[in-house]
Each structure stands twice: as structure tokens, then as C-alpha cells.
Length: 299
Image (tube, rainbow, N blue to C red; front, side):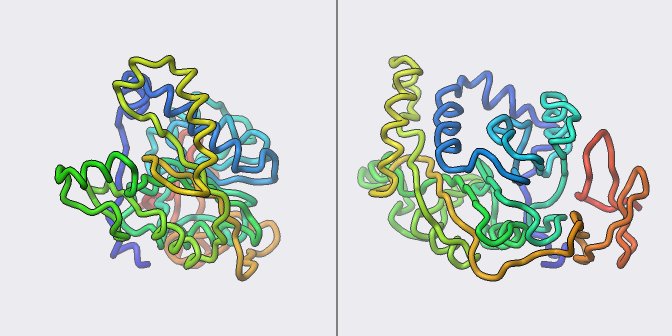
């Protein structure tokens, strides 16, 4: 895809996402049940893992069994928050980039995660194709998506309080760049991108303010952890986690090559101390405040 024809991107640059959405909104329940699902699906140890849409590093502590954790986000400010929380350990690499043009050599990663991200993507198949290219064959990919066919949406539709049909497989954009997806369409997109979908877990069954106020959080988390196993039978929760394995061709870059120019695809980028320069197109990508910045080339 030509960067001049770029799909619209949801940009959290400069936002107060961490404080407003997580801390002030009291989403401890959602955070804890998502952690349970991710621990159940992702191998705990490995060589290199890619966290797409890492944000401020909310879930990164679950990935520390990997030798290298690459936190990728479109927001530089979110990555700076992540760096402030996690530090400058060689284990963590902070990369600002457009997920439609990942700046990594093919087959670089053993595993990848996408949690609370795909619902902001207008072109999910393009994102999945990029992630598949960055993964080695047999690499593990954990995807979380907002479920269009959740129980609340079904009841609202049956009561004629909602126009869109939760059983229709097309995604619904209920707010600009906020999409819900049908589980069957997600399975189809994964297969199209050369992933073999496996275990599914349903998550956040009790995401209702009334329940969260009336029932102790620990009890809701326990009940949700049990209910997650029903994901192989039906998917009626607002959030679904899918664990897939990369299949098809074994895409690998040359030995020792890490970066790929997101503009032209060249696999030779020279280190210029404060920037990486593409040997083919000549573009320079800045390294600022410990963040490799591939959002826009230096002028």
C-alpha cells in the first residue's frame, strides 16, 4: 500500500488515555480479565515478541519472558510513557510506526499481540498481513477484537433499540474509527492472512457498570476466568481473544537484519547515530528520546 494512499489512522498522540480511560474510569476488572486471557494464550518465554498498539505498556509486564519485547505504537507520547514505566533496559525496544507499514524484516518475531487495537483499524486484513509477514512460520499471534455479536447488542437489536444487526458479518463502525467485528469474519480474515485460528476465549462477560458497582471485583474476575473457556462454544461477550499460528510460507529476512524501510521495503538501513537511513530510497528515520520514529521521515 502506497503511503500516499494511507488508510485513516486513529492517533492517540498527546491523549490522557491512561488516566482518563483506565485509572479514572475504574477499569480494574477489564484489565485483570484481559491479563488472564493473554497469559492463557501466549507462550510465556521466547526470543522476540511484537506488541502492536502497546500504548503506555499496560500489558508489557506479561511479556518479560521474551529476550526482546518490541513495543510498537503510532503515538510517540504513549511510547514515552511506556519508556518512563519500563525503563531503558535492552529488553525493551520502543518503535513509533504505522501498523499498515511495519518497519521490520520478514520473519523477525516468534510471537505478536494485538489487544484493544484492531477495533480502531479501517482495514484489518492489511494489518493482519503485515503482522504475518513479521512473524516466522509457526509463530504465535494473539488477537483481541470487539465482538459485534455480543449478548447486549443482540438484546438491543431484538428490542429494536439498535439499527445494525449483530448477526450480519460485516463490521459496524459505531463511532468514527471504532469498529465491532463478527467472530466468523475475524476467523475468515485470519485464514486469509495465513494464520490458523485456534483457541478462542470470551472476555469481559460482566462489563456492566451496575454489576461492577454491586459485586466485588475479585469475584467478577473469578467468574469471568471460568466463563472464558466457553469461547470455543459461543462468543457472546463484548471482547474475544483468538490465538493463531502463522502458516504458509516461511518468510525470513537475511540473517542479522532487523529493520525494513516502511517507505520502500529495503532491508538495509544504516545507523547514523540519531537516525536510520535507508540505503535504497535515502529516507532518514529519527531516533528520539529512546524511540525509533518511523511515522514520518526526516526532511
